[in-house]
Amino acid sequence: MKRFILLFFAIFTLLQAQDPDPKQRARAARDLGKQGEDAISKVIPSLSDADLAVRIETVKALIEIGGPKTLDGLVRASADNDPEIQIRATDGMVNVYLPGFIKTGLSGTLSRAGASVKGKFTDTNDQVIDPFVQVRPDVIAALGRLARGGASLESRANAARAIGVLRGRAAIPDLVEALRSKDEKLMYESLVALQKIGDPSAAPRISFLLRDLQEKIQVQALETTGLLRNQEAAPQVRDALAHAHSVKVRRAALGALAMLADPADHAIFLQNLSDKDELVRSAAAEGLGRLKNSTDQATLSQMFNAEHGMNPRLSSAFALVSLGELKTDRYGPLQYLLNTTNQRTWRAVASAFLIELARDEPVRQAIYSMLGTATKDEKIQLSNVLSRSGSTDSVAPLEALSKDPDPDVAAEGIRSLRTLRTRLP
Image 1 (cartoon, one colour):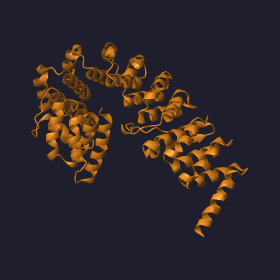
Image 2 (cartoon, one colour):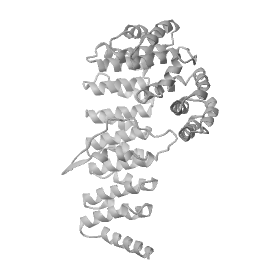
Image 3 (spheres, one colour):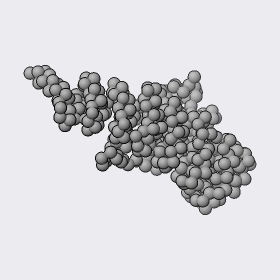
Image 4 (cartoon, helix red, strand yellow):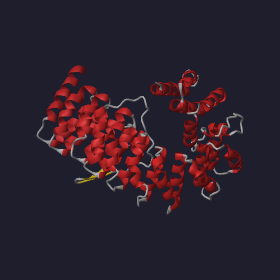
């Protein structure tokens, strides 16, 4: 009897999908979205429906079904000329690779007034897939086309954000083209995406933004230049620092110089080490740490012991470890960085420093010696650190973490081990 009812319902839904009334066709699309993967082939034809509402409900249905098998339909939907459909298709594609994204994506905030579609971007833009996740090339190509020439600036900016989340290296030319739009939101999302992709070859192509009149864009361009280590842009970054019209630009410019770590900037770092702004002091300390000049160790030690601000103290700890201070005693800079990963507010800052420091084998060896007494949160963060910066010597420690009695630590260990093995030759 149950089987008969299901069969009847399926036939009824198919008949609705062919109904002359678009409201009935839209309802049929919604109903098919509740039937799971088996309904995908029945849903996709409605992507070509002449009625916009039907096409929107069809994309929603594909998103509700979810999973890799919906990608063909979502890629097809992304070529629709309606901005709402483009936005929903974009979020749906990302959700396949990063489950849960749909709840925080732009499509969840959409409002429509005729042909105009508006949405609110969340302030947090730190999501990115694990390195071992492989994204279909046609998905990145579809997102690239949208970033370059979507139906609205919102759909273009949303596509740029999606490219960053999916680490879409092949879409870098599309992101660079989007940077010439003069729209702040689209330019900002494109710069963040380039940071997430992390391809240094893209850095010279954003240099024209280092003196942009929009402060938010100039700051982001400076940060991106530093993160992508564009040494050739150092003169332009120094010029931006010298002519900074706000403390935000000063912070970003000095932070970029700190990432570039040019010995010519040693005096600039020393000069700003006692600045009244905490983040300026932080950038100065990081710059000295990356220069690895042993004559700065005493100055940085004094800063580490005297600082009350968390940002500059963490930065001075980073600098001291970078200069070779690897003692693991409870008051040392390395232990301080590790302890800070227990604090939710400062965890990301401390972990970022540890990721950079762990690229050096002596630092990794010191970290291995600390795993035995590490807390749960410390183990989880160190797993991520080793997955990002470890080498073959990190396999055994991560295997041990993957067998930790705490299930959360073990799960992170397994995930990190998979990431590390993806990176190793």
